[in-house]
Amino acid sequence: MSDPNFDSKSASFLEWFKAWPGATFHPDIKIEDLRDKGAGRGVVATADIPEDTVLFTIPRAAIINTETSDLPKRIPQVFETTGLEDTDNEADEDGSETSGPPDNWVSLILIMIYEYLQGDKSRWKPYFDVLPSQFETLMWWSEQELVELQASSIVAKIGKDEADGMFRSRVLPVIEAHADVFYPEGSERLSEDQLMNLAHRMGSTIMAYAFDLENDDEDADPENDDEWVEDKEGTLMMGMVPMADILNADAEFNAHVNHGEDSLSVTTLRPIPAGGEILNYYGPLGNGELLRRYGYVTDRHARHDVTEISWDLILSVLKDTLKIDEAIWGKAVNELDPEEIEDAFVIERDSGEPDSRGELHGEATFKEIPTDLIEQIHTILKAIRKVSPTTIPDKALRDEITFTTIHRALELRLAQYPTSQAFDYDLLTNSKVSGRQKMAVAVRWGEKVLLQEAINFVHEKLLKSQSKASEDSEPYAKRQRRR
Image (cartoon, rainbow, N blue to C red):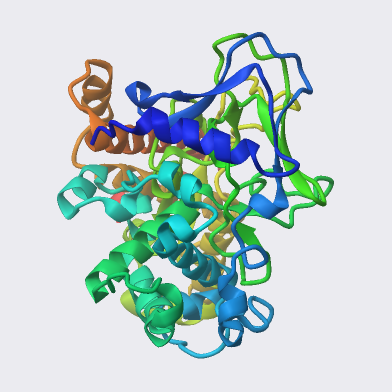
């Protein structure tokens, strides 16, 4: 939906930002309307900018967190020992634990709701005016829209029910118990449905924009640097960082957020030409995860695409491949320790890492079957051999069975998507889809491309394993057909 005040809100926000003591904003950059590119606001260079230039500085006092908001001071009994004792984030999300201090994820949601409800009384009002009120993240998609993702593993990671449970058990009760604090005098109280919607809105804002404020530049994990990581374990401070979150991001980028004692600063990693957009980095995320967290996809992030294959599918194929007696199969499966069994395995490429200038080099290639998948198949094959030694007489046959199983399971995994890779490619390249449907097609197409690469890779492995087998022995699949 078009906002007629979009530019004036940007101007007011910039004026507000510059007024903070210690804030800086380089004269050769500007906040620009990039809605025609599907990117909302962004920061663009207005002149050539050299490498290692500080573009802007954000004083820590301007960041919204538990140390700067008035809410923890007004209801200290709620925030006491926040995030230091409540480390079971999973329990919080499913709503099974309702006592104790909130973890930092819940704390920041409460603070964001509080500051939002203060309206003009909040010192961050101009900042809230430029934060999105609508989202493209998967949490906000309808069931019909989610169907377009087809068999993508990302659908199971949305977690809307878990979020609803957490909001109802950890957020709404605090607001209701301290309504006189959350609502300014004379303001209208929100209904439960309105509060739930607001909680989701603030949760999505945090998902897309919040920063981990305790990064040490020397020890930071590049994948998690300058982004909110969902499984914070309740021990790290999170915050909303005005101006830094105006930056858009891609798999290739040209700026970096540096965490100082009193401020955060954004610095160029390489020269940026006039008209070039300043881009941050969210980590090596595939388009599915990028869409779930941030609500967009990019061509460059496709190199990081991932998918998953379930152990149940592997087991089903293995059983069909071996064609052994049910009793033998049952005994072998019972030998497995359920706590040691992985439920699913990630299929991904060797996508490489960006260099110190934020640039990528070379093509991402599929180079390896997940080691834990091979080991888990070998574990059950050993159990089968223990029960029936003649079924798997040697290592060569074991390897052939392993690759045969993985190859067939990958083919079946690809077949779970109802449309072909070629069909999706046609939709994308001939502009036959747009909006959320286009992003969904990009995600599922990328996963199909990856699965086909994995199938081809495993096929080569299978051929090699068969060639290593004794020339006197027929391939295992052929022997099975003759039984």
